[in-house]
Each structure stands twice: as structure tokens, then as C-alpha cells.
Length: 379
Image (cartoon, rainbow, N blue to C red; front, top):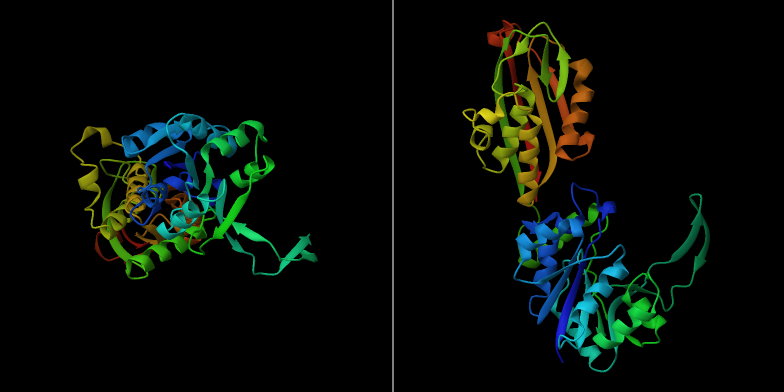
């Protein structure tokens, strides 16, 4: 028999949070979807179902490696599109896998395939072991018997002709392909699932998946990077200064090639430093006229994106502004909120504070403002 894998990755995954759909977010040093595809690399053919908006990225990253197809408005529609594509291709059975389930083991895939030798459908599951309650308005209203209940997983395997016929005659939407198979009267064999075969759904699932990956590789449980940055800008003519993304009224401005946001520049360099990736000048040369007067948000967003691409989460950042004036305290909360927005992290992971130099040095003489920053990255 000839087998194909269908990887369903057309959803938006908003419950997972983050700047992009969960299947494209970094797990280790590569996207979640890369891990999922690697788990099925030994299968003869793979069809990757993507959201239409992601097709260009899919071609760039996976073109020539898998067959790409645009998904439908629902998961069921996406799977059916892939099944229709495979009809008449010589494939006789399919494994249908969630794109955001990146830790499926070879042993689990083998169990599903072995069960398909004797049944039209097979899927992994784990028996429910916890007590089950019903509830309303924050209170327990009853209980349910857990006997015979299972937690479903993927890949769910089927005879291609049988599951395609079930999709064509079945409901427009269903929880999974087992539900569609059963609606068509197909028997589905349960095989033993795995606790580590998790589906990334919520933000905390990324950390759990990272820990499993590290354990499998025998790597240290955590990689912590610390970076610091320092920047200085002199005062010039003006009526405000921009500090950590917030315009603060002042009798003078700050001199710089960009918008001279000294706090954001120091923080950007701190992130680059933690990555051993140089400084702002390397990525945005001051000799390049396109950055003349540029918003420093561009630099900070680039540093944060680079950290994510390399598999790091920004754990916290801390910025200290050094000046006699203007007073930073009344604006500190707004500065924290703006930095958190640009970095894509919670505001309680951002600190902005200020100090004076007790009238000593160039900051004490009110010739300019200095800033120091620290960033912690975790993978």
C-alpha cells in the first residue's frame, strides 16, 4: 500500500497568541511546522494545506519538498481538498495530521499504520484519567463518568477511498476526521497515543514543547541569553524628546540620524547583544539615507523578530534613562506599554525607570541624555 501524509496548517491559531499563526512561530530554532513535517519525512508523499495568505511563504520554505495546497474556510474543507487532490494518484491510505502537533514520534506513526492493515481507520488516543466535572458560573454543578472516554490525537489514518467518500457524504464541519468516518459507518481502531504528542493551542504549550525537545536531544533544559546596551544623544533645538516611543514635552530635542530615541536604541542593542548579532549600526547603517529620521520602533521590532526567528523568547527588558530633565516618572507607564507593544510581550515584563547623575558629567550639565538597557532571552 502507498501512504501519503496530509498536514493541516491553514488555521490562524489565535488562542496561542504571538505575532503570527502558531504553526509559523518558532519552536527551538525553526517554525513549529518544520518539526511537524520532519516527523513525516519518511512517508512517501506529503500534502501541506496552508491558508491562502501563507502560500507564498510555504513555497519559499517548503517548495519542492511537499505538495502545497490552499485550505478552505474550515478544517473539514481543508482536509477534503487534500483528499480530492490525492484521488487517482496511486495513494491508498492517508495519515491526517494537525500542523501544530510537532512532536509525533516514529513509533506512534508506525502504530497507526500497523492498525490500518486490518481496519479502514485508526487513530491514537489516551484514556481520560482525571475526574470530569460539569460547571457553571465558576461552580461545580455535577460530574461525569470517565469510563470509556479518550483524548483524541493525530495522525488519524484511513483508507483513502473510504475517508474521501465519507467526506463527500458527511457534514460540512466536524471535530475531526474520526467523527466524519464514524458518521459514514467506518470502524476506527484506537491505538495507544503519547503524552508528549501535544497539540500547541495556548501560549504555555510552547514552553512545554520546548522542554520535550530539549529532553529528547539531551540538551540543557534552558538556554538563557543576557545582553546590555548603552546609548547617548546630545540635546539640540526642539520642543520635545522621544523616549521609549513616547513624545515628552521639553525645551530641547535630541540630535540623531533617526528619531534619536536613546532609550529604544539602548534596548535594541541589548537584544542584539544577547544574540551576539552586533548593534543597530550593523543592521541599519547611519550612512544609509533611508534611515534618516526613521522611527526607532523599526529597529526594536527588527531585533525582537530576529530573537524569535532564532528560537528565543524575550523574558524581560529593563531600561534606565539618565538625565536631569525632563522628568521621566510621569511617562514611565506609557513607555512600558509602548515597548511591550513593539516587543510583543506582556507589559509586566518591561521596566522603564530614570535616574540623575547628581549634576555630574554631561548629563548633569544637561548636555544630553544617556540610557542603559538589559534584555533577557530564553530558549
